[in-house]
Amino acid sequence: MAPPAEVLAVRGLSKTFPGVRALDDVDLTLHAGEVHALIGENGAGKSTLIKLLTGVYRPDAGDITFQGRQVAFGTPLEAQKAGISTIYQEVNLIPLLSVARNLFLGREPRNRFGLLDFARMHREAEQTLRTFGVRVDVRQPLRTLGVGAQQMVALARAVATEARIVIMDEPTSSLEPREVETLFAVIRRLRDDGIAVVYVSHRLDELYAVCDTVTVLRDGRRVHHGSLAELDRLALVSTMLGRELGEVRREGLTKFTGDHTTDSEPVLRAEELTVEHRLHGVSVAVRPGEVVGLGGLLGSGRTETAKAISGALALSSGKVTVAGVPLRGGSTPAAIRAGISLLPEDRKSEGIVPGLSVRENIALAVLPQLSRFGLVSEARVDSVVDTFMKRLRIKASSPHQKVGELSGGNQQKVLLARWLAMNPRVLLLDEPTRGIDVGAKAEVQKLVDELAADGLGVLLISSDLEELIEGSDRVVVLKDGAVVGELTGDDVTEDKLMRTIAGDVPPATGRPAADGDRPDRGKDARPQGEVAVDG
Image: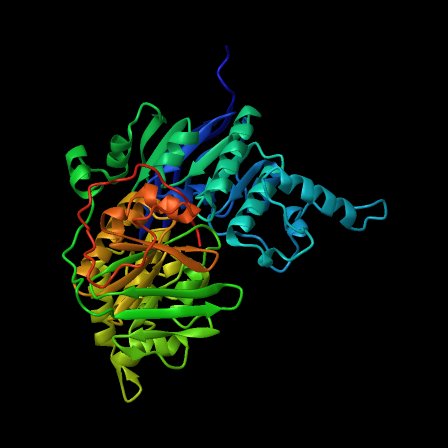
């Protein structure tokens, strides 16, 4: 039997940005009907490689051969028309246009008069989306859909362009379990149809579920290429991090623990939070030194709870108390003054300012505290920025590099540094490790535990079930905007969390923990899987 045809061959690809060698002499080969994992830590060069393949950047050296001919795409549209489609982690569609217009953007069906054939467009859009498990009114604006549904529209659009290569960059980051299974079915269908898939993900379960081969990048260079089945998980992590296996066991795969104070009064108490059509009497408390997780499926109200606490979402009723003092005003500035900091889920649209430098992004919130009589002390700013760049190990050519040029994980660290510089009492973390690699993820998780050990109260939202269970003292479970249970101590397990989410709550769980309950951070249970439980 003849081997599959080679679809793409990359030879000696290199790219340099000011002060940073982003990609260094990288080779990559793709074959028809192959699902190829592209992995590495943040800053390893994955995004740069994808942008070189799709015409966003031009390489400094090397060549790209696509379907037997050398190519040099000038724009992403050129790459798409040639047969390379990309689905990015952040949905890159047009929110104000209808679902159907987004699906057919650039290839709209027209009638014999050259006008848009809306009837045909709507009909074919509904048929296409139905194969992806999405049933919506395709005439409504895309922005009216949830993030998960928008991601499925982006996936459907990429697949419908008759591509020979489909690049998926963290495609499950906004999907719930049912949608993930639909995505995997689509990937297998693409493979059977002879289409090559490049799959970028930091979720190891996903890689081993759908990928045939793997390329590992580290510091801009290719350090491994081969069959994924021949590389076990620990060896894969070791290759990504560039460490010995024993070192990875100690640093990359261990559970971080801390000695947290649990017998004190809550530093944060949210009571009966109600937001019309979104939250229905949600109550949650966080003690100093405690990490409280929020669990639930898509639309359960986790993100809305964090935004309501931080003043970003107006309450219909309910109250928030910080260190015994009621939060008045219900605004974000009032919450910040009280000591509440929110790390938002969407760092690009709600967090970082990509056109500003790392230094400016970190200092943004703390500037009033670093000024006297309206004049900012540059020396104090430099001191704060230097402290947090070192503490969070932010990789940048200098503090003056634009934050938009950094990898996703380093952008997340910059945003975290901004709020830590405010010395908050309560830190609300909405998907703090979303889309970042194993090494950066471990660093963020360790940092969260260190912050809790220093007495900071943390509310943790995560789509990674393992992260939620391992990182939390207690887990408050939401469903349809209401609290349906609370797990504490030995009850914080994958089985009991899933049962609570599904409504099958054993008698011993699903109750609010009394103030005297002792959370147990030393539990041995380590769930092996991940479930995208987005909120």
